[in-house]
Image (cartoon, rainbow, N blue to C red; front, side):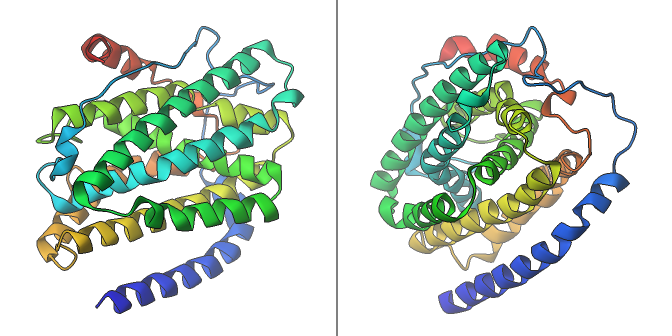
Length: 317
């Protein structure tokens, strides 16, 4: 049965590679089709709100509940969130590297400060999720090196074969995905309903800081001559690969937990992601907005969500 799952993943990957290459030529058409009335922004270098400032926090979390099914008591949902965490230590370092390569080309003091704060925040995210992942693997018996190996290999291949500016476009795309997921998590209180409150805290903190620096990589890419075509193509590839990686890790975790073929778990996961609360359904329009010709992350100013979190949760960190 495991062979069948791997075969399906390989077939779907081949088909998606082919379809992405075909569809990438149509991206401009997609962008034009959804380019509705949208307030214009004068993109120079930093285009975050003028009074927007942020910095890295130094939180401390109680992660003991990682020993069980901490997310709504569901093996699938717990594995889904845990799989996301598995991507962060290597992913965050890759994001930092891709942005810092262009720091010397930036002369806007505001964007330079944002780059430094972005670097500090992502470095803390990397350390916190590495702590999370090591404890999770210790408590649940997962092999961290085995989980990280494919991502390490892909990052190394990108570094050798993909231009620095296109790697930066990949970071822009990944930051868009984390930003829209963060917005959904902070905006809708049903995401962690019935879940362990202590584990939920690390995800809410991470969501807040992803929101704070959501435009930094985008503004750097624009400032150094990155094109809209690069960003649009990167979003298609990044969306695919992130969710492919997560699904593979979920399958590995469920297999080790003896729940891989538990149809109820997969059904509950499908309902959560697509129906109720329907996280993917809720973020789809925000994902699609990235293809607008004049898209910028701060055209959706959601700093009120940061303020709400700071009022409710920040003192508890």
